[in-house]
Image (cartoon, rainbow, N blue to C red):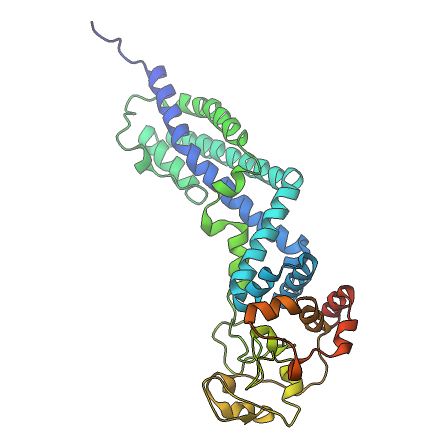
Length: 358
């Protein structure tokens, strides 16, 4: 039995449907990409922990650590600061997206897909006019259509190679696309929710990854005495490493030679004293005030003598004394006995000191 000959109307419907099906994934990718960029800008403006510089971010990290009082997280921050920063940013972004999805994320997605739908229909209409003015065919229409969308969608004539369209009536194509596109836009929009949003995002355009790139392309060299991380915003910067406030040395497991006593020295106070230290892998002591003479990593740091100290780390050592002692198998005893005045700092004062000094 012979099949009925395909009419021009049938051809245009099939061709229009194929175009819209081919556009489905590029439309979805474009909407998520544009929304992610818009959202990143919004988060940088509205999220308190992410709306400033790296020092502001670190202050919020330290506040969160104090609120949670999770020793393992503290150790991750001290020994793997870059990883901790990344994790913190991811958590903050995820929380923001979840909390603001219905009032911010969803409206952005709907607006972006609406604008894209309008642009596609405009491209279809102008392509039809272009064909009529130039007495062209569907091939010319397709070329014009894809070129107009090239800056918005990953879509080209190649996506339709092998699809027969010789007898397609161009004047009917615009109406077919309008109808099919409306259905596809509705289908894509119906899948918008907090679960699919992070899954659908390309890793390169995720708000958390964009913010990680912004905050983490910096110096991560740690002080050889206390593990405080250099705050220079350039990764391979010229000049010395430095931090506004150093940790207590025992936080990194440093201890007094010949004992099992964890150190309660603070770098900025130590370099103002007449005391000395033993560089790692050395049997020769060096005066703290001449610490650069130890060479190597010690010579790359600028540690300014300063008797002002951040109460936050004194509170931390008191709060987690037993955890630190167990972690390093050392004790805060003898020379490393924690001063009684350190124990007077409540957590609230320790946290507030971050606002005062950082």
